Image (cartoon, rainbow, N blue to C red; front, side, top):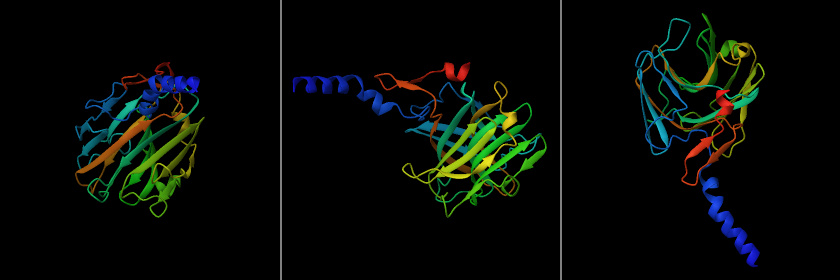
Length: 247
């Protein structure tokens, strides 16, 4: 009996803080942007705040990120992990004011700026969840890429969970409506994968809008790379194996 009590005390003392706090790569705690991010906003179209465990982004109308030469989107970027295969995840509320605004898309991003090659996966124009991508001047929407999820499968008038899984050159795109739901695949694509090779691309979060849009507000609850090992100090400060990203 005494041994069981001792084990319980040790677990409570040394393990509980790690269980409580070890969740995601960035839970947007505090009030400043985590040093892992590079904020990219070439035209000053965004304004972000971090408070109460969420990042809120106010996006101007007409903040487009389209073919090469149209560069008004707002991005939060980091280096990809030093892994051949990995996933990125986030939870975003695209309908902070009750309904998703028109002509806009928040989402997960793979981005090779030099080639102007990007893949954006997220709620689109109060219509669906879809892949939009581009290489140089060649832009694809859902009709071309054939990757998407309809609102009768995953609603977009509330929090939306997003995931992109990279396996070699193949990207697969997922979404779900709540944390306990199973991930629903919207399809796969291999066209842009060769542009996302070690040393020449970034990953992260993107917000864009175009003709017909209005000033919009979005909230992001977390961003994660599930395959990265993570640890938490007893004070609750998240640390991770940064060598997995930086190498």
